[in-house]
Length: 99
Length: 454
Figure 1: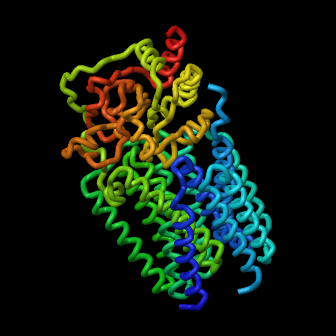
Figure 2 (figure 1 turned 90 degrees about the vertical axis):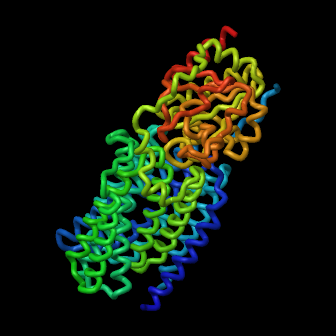
């Protein structure tokens, strides 16, 4: 195995643990926005898609790269926007009026 | 490795901090914006760093994807959120598969062994995520039946398909065979279709969380293929987040992940349940309004039926009227109420219910004995006392909201039909239960107008 690949595995495992630590205490109220926000982050594949699209030559490769950029962008743009739309609605109770 | 790597690392740090902030309501919106900024940074770095030769492809993809994503995100109804999240998961999976396929075509599959393995994983996981997510979408959108679909030998066929992916992957890696990689995609596609088709609608919270996790893992695998740490870190974070939710959802049903995925839960008992001729107390809107008006504490227990009836605003209107009369209202949310984690919370937030009025399982059950009226709207299995009392029940052991401990229970339901699990609910026949037979939204409106005369 190449050293770069081994480094990749190390990064993958440690990042997984970071993910567990960071997310394990999310309150149920935020489960949906967390999921859709995380989903948008998984659109990071767009980095690979952009590289592919920028370098693509030949019909098959170009079509694959174009579709990769399109699907990844749907994921990224849609995911972050819809998460923001949801979070905008979450409000705390206004200070109680005199009861 | 070059300095450019540090910029990708910065993007990854923004993801981590963003996710951290997403876990507190106060900072969640900022956290999402931060993660989005990390994404933008990663994209810009990529475009600057690579010697892009075909800008047309890049720009066409960004414009097309951006437009589609923005329209979907801005136009979706909150009740349709589970299927949208499922669809976005699917697009993410597809993107990882496409990146993998591009690498296969670009290199004629001449990978080092370890890279070849990650290509196969990116293709297989990405594709299962894609086809599985779109079956989940079709079920949630009502394009196909939400009932689990299975046939004799389905499990064996799944096993054969999984073995096929493995075999084809080995062939591809060992022989640098381009066709083998394409076949991995084809077989994984069938596997995702079949696996999710066999899972019923009420188990969707688990399925969506799992697909979410897989979309992250697929991205991480694509990161190994193109040797980019931002993909590996981002993908691993999402993989972990989705996995935590998956486990939480399985626990909330007291079932193992394997049981949810492979048992075809809900296929039995699809026929009518004999309810005997046990008497139920049917309530009029006036009965319900009186019970609510003279209560001190009201606990609203929403379920998927509230989403189907689009009743969240009507619920809120009724509760506002009650609060103005001095009734204290809170909401008890079961973790698997609805079709995705947090589904009810999103709907109630849309209806302007403050999130600090929403209680989870552990917060709400101790309050049930002091609750005067538990108002159950479109929830069934999550309030079924059999899960607690009847060891022979298929849902025995599942944690429930113990509404039967409230002084009065009002169940809003269109008929006595059983819930998803296909089992009868003894709650309906209890001495302190009133059945309010109506569509959720209509019921709330009727109760509200009746309340004016109390």
